[in-house]
Length: 411
Ligand SMILES: CCC(=O)OC[C@H](C)CC[C@H]1O[C@H]2C[C@H]3[C@@H]4CC=C5C[C@@H](O)CC[C@]5(C)[C@H]4CC[C@]3(C)[C@H]2[C@@H]1C
Image (tube, rainbow, N blue to C red):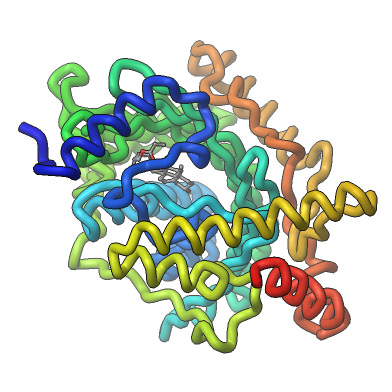
């Protein structure tokens, strides 16, 4: 039976009809008000590191095989936050706000044991929507950077989402890099008006020291499987030996096994609470920072005043259109504050090639998720020079001017 009643039920029904003529651009859909979230998609980069201790753990491990296992554990621990935290908090998946070009989400996690982990997330492209992020813990030399976009389709009352992009984890102390690909997902429960994410197909992690993980996702009804099922296998590239498996439900408990013996169980519920992200109070934020930029829209959504939501949203959207038009006329382009798009990254290509060879040569399977276009409009990399220029104040003038243009345009 539908979870909706009254007007919500009828608006949802007409919304489902509208999705049927879906053109692939999730952001362009006007979803019914009750499914709108006041959180912008640029905030989702934070889901990578809500367990800072797990994020930093591999840096402290001297044994490369155990380190690869800790990276796999950390990655699997992010899935619950990435893909089910909104359903748990809000009762269903919600439609995030569509970030404007240049929108920022900046913060850090303070942890008594591992110290400070910094988050920088920037909407580096609006058409198509691409979010780039850099998350780093200087004290332990752990650096994650990546970018992602979504290609979506609609079939038999389900929204299918292919993720485009990659995540790269670097452990300075061990001079080691891990390439991480992103899971495909689909949105179930649309017909009941309570959508939620289910992951599917496979992703890989390939390390520069010679360890490879294949991660397979499955949902309910899959050979009698449970929802949110996952099975990960960690191999040694050189010997082709299966070292560890981790399996279970990424929303509940995962079991680590070496060969057939169970080593440990871990889960990320109340036993391992997440660390709260620290962000500046709104009045101290840069005009491009997400929660300041969307404050009026968020307030309208909180009030349930959907007319005001629409008015405030279109102010931002119109301002953005004006800025793009002006840039076009002047032949200028929006200056990304922390990221740069490059054609290729040699380390990434090397890891992609190594993973492909291992899957074909040793596992005898067609390389999974390598066919995914890892590139959006380029490979987005964190530009440490740009970052230093901002932190040192050398770019203070550009930062101030960028904020002003957005403020003036939105007036
Ligand atoms: C488009 C029609 C519509 O608005 O339907 C409303 C429904 C809430 C379903 C569509 C939305 O579902 C949301 C789930 C979002 C993904 C959740 C997690 C991640 C991981 C993160 O690292 C990158 C972003 C990603 C893939 C989100 C992308 C946007 C998704 C699919 C939202 C849909 C608009």
